[in-house]
Amino acid sequence: MTSLNEAALPELEGRLPLPSYDRRTVRTGIVHFGVGGFHRSHEAMFIDRLLNLGGSQDWGICGVGVLPSDASMHGALTSQDGLYTLVLKGSGGTEDARIIGSITEYLFAPDDPAAVIRKLADPATRIVSLSITEGGYSINDTTGEFDPRTPDILRDLEPNTVPGSAFGLITAALAQRCQQGTAPFTVMSCDNIQGNGDVARKALVSFARLKDPGLAGWISETVAFPNSMVDRITPVTTDADRAAVTAAYGFSDAWPVVAEPFEQWVLEDKFPTGRPPLEDAGVQMVDDVEPYELMKLRLLNASHQVMSYLGYLAGYRYVHEVCTDPLFADFVAGYMELEAAPTLRPVPGIDLDAYRKELIHRFSNPAVRDTLARQMVDASERIPKFVLPVVREQLRLGGPVDRAVLVIAAWARFLEGTEEHLEPIDRRLGDLRAALRADHAEPGAFLNLTDVFGDLGRNARFAAAYRQAREALQRSGARAAVQDLKEPSIPTRSTS
Image (tube, rainbow, N blue to C red):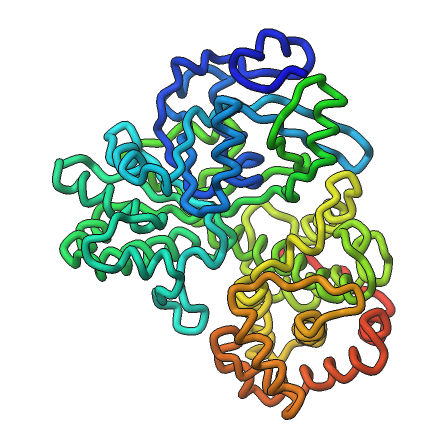
């Protein structure tokens, strides 16, 4: 069986689209931390599209892994010369696959951190992009301040250490560029966080200040951190996906990517040392990304949380199962329409009614087979960023919060364990379960976990609604609790 790599490309000609450019002439201009499925279905795909259009040869991607778990990706991409298959699956059974070639290098920081720093310090590197997850920035959701708590960050803050975290490596490279008189690179976050560029700035400058206050001042004054909104549903690659690529195209790919056809990237145009012509590849370059960002975070990302815990408790395991059940689809649509949408600013060029309907259609795609389990990882980071801002705003406005509160109650019940138990994956799991033990003795005590809820536990309306929702779930289960909130019809109202 042919294995995917550069030497195999001539043999694969005609089976599926291949890179039309000479990868040997592509130079690295972007270093990316966090090479997972989403990066490869999104940013790397956009850069590959540009390279196929001709030109832009200075913008190849060097991937960087910093976690021990990144060793598998390092092995897969290194053996395949950075190549991989991107398979887009539509809801009507359509499938579109191509080989992506924009990742031309991959460095595994635990093996050689000095090589990563050299690559970052190279003047040819003009963008450093990040998809390190919502919790990777060590920003306290309650205070909004940098709160170093992960072992890798704490270790890098010790004197005279060899850096191993993303921020440690980036700071070391910026120190070299400052000493050499080399212009800094732009730091571009691609994570699902409101003001992701601002968050990246806060994290990096705060980290640098603890290492070298003078360097922190230089970073704050000279490094650009554009905000962005990114969107493409990309589930975790399975063995079935690997087998399907082999069966359809006759070669072995150690780590293909499956995603939906929909793509969106809205990006602030703040790149003082240059950027690729991303607009030619379909990226929307704007002066202010916030309206688009809030729309996506509070509608799409929040809806992932809204459907997941209730859907799981009702016996579903896949996103499309929840969203093709009329009761749950109506519940998710009602959350978007009645609770989330009224908290948004007008979004230029977007019909929010159409956007919400499109989301339900995307969620209902059975070909993607996105799991609820993927969406429930690190909920203590995601719920405060996606759902609780809507709750706070609606409490301020005196608006509805019943659906969001039922989601919080369902999350608490999920954390306690179900008949078909899935062990939650959450960096705060110990604290969450301690709070739930207190909740049994004093209903509502779960909300006193200030690292997650801030001061919301002191809001009498929110606390009373939570206790009522917990009781309803305990008494009658998820499906009946959702049914109790079902409206006869969801009003159609334009908020664009």
